[in-house]
Amino acid sequence: IALLVIALVALYSTGPGYGSSIDSLMWSQDRTGDTEGGSLESEETQRSLMDKMEKPLVSNEADSTQIDYDSILSKRKQLLSDTLKVPITEPKTGDLVRLNDPRAGKAMATILCLARNEDIADVISSVQQLEEQFNGQFKYPYTFLNDEEFSDQFKDELIRLLPKGRKINFGKIASELWDMPDSIDRDIFKTKMEELGGIQDVEKVSYHNMCRFYSKTFYHHPLLQEYKYIWRLEPNVNFYCKIDYDVFQFMEDNDKIYGFVLNLYDSPESVRTLWSSTMNFVKKNPQYLHERGSYEWIKDNVQKPDNYEITGGYSTCHFWTNFEIINLDFLRSKPYEDFMSYLEDQKGFYYERWGDAPVRSLALALFADKSRIHWFRDIGYQHFPYTNCPKCPANSHRCNGNCKPGSFSPWPALEKENCLPVWIEHIMSKQELEVY
Ligand code: GDP
Ligand code: MN
Image 1 (cartoon, rainbow, N blue to C red):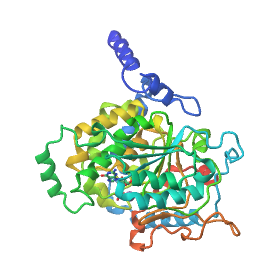
Image 2 (cartoon, protein in one colour):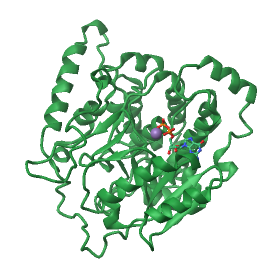
Image 3 (cartoon, rainbow, N blue to C red):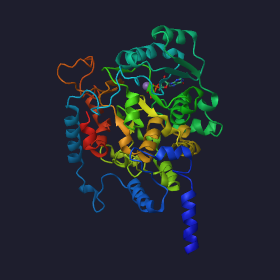
Image 4 (cartoon, helix red, strand yellow):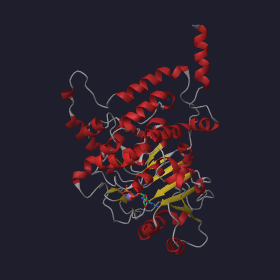
């Protein structure tokens, strides 16, 4: 038995997972210098994390009819409105890098935009607003990617819009990074899509390609190899408020790996087996689970109980990835890459319509320290039909008045799609809430 224990210890300490490559070693060292996972002492922790994975956020094993959904929801609603009515400007971390700082504009970062040639007018609109509110000051390069060659018109219009000397990359995406892989049976795909009819964009192969691309291949594109951070930009979005500090240096200095502005519930039919696949992956790789993951957020069963039911245990809460600022080291880490190849093998990018948003969000919630995920509360942003609109102090001219502070959507019926209340209640610390 003693020998067996020794053998097991040896297996554990050299086994796959955190600490098994330089990449992931660097990855697992966070601000406090601790490393996570992989040790025997953590077996206990792993068990308790698996337990969190299996249980809904709110349960009453004796009698589930005793859960007072209404009172939980109304408490959340209050918390959200209390949070959003506080006037804010920018993070009060005391270390913001502004224009006159030698580090301003010097992060290894690019603004990334995936677009088609015919999207040019909407791309111009987004770029113009981002330049006006942020990047005119900081002058970060743009990287435009397309699965086809960009037309001269597309390139010329952007070159004309942006100041001389600004770096602009235009790239084509290779077929290996974009197209439906050979492992996908075309006939099964067709049948599955007919069954799923009704889900947004489900019948478009290109939409599936896009979701897979943004989940698991975009950061392998040659043009992105020199960058550590990307800010994802989509055509036809709006920015409402000036951002007078370098957000990439903010990420760097505060050890953030992910920045979001909106988070929502997803359509559960599009990710019917994503949770069970994730559970299977995690059972094989429990060492990847982070002790301070965002479990409560992905296990909420109160606000949209049907979503939780249909997916077999996933709230469907996800960061809305049309805006995201990412430290690509996270995507390049072993846990993320292993998770992606596992998901690819499950074929849900094509036999279902797994979005990059739930995929990325699950990876972040499970493998990352929640304190490294940042809500950019101060960034006024809209992608139809949802908005993040900060309340400004009186006399502030930071925002242009084109969004309504605290308003999530013009349609009250869509309020229940907002997962932010869960994020605020269960994931954010008091201190984080007060940083604004
Ligand atoms: P939605 O926000 O989920 O409705 O998806 P969008 O239609 O906005 O697509 C998300 C992003 O991918 C946008 O930046 C689009 O321009 C881009 N995109 C979507 N499909 C394609 C495609 O087939 N080719 C290219 N080059 N870009 C695409
Ligand atoms: Mn979009």
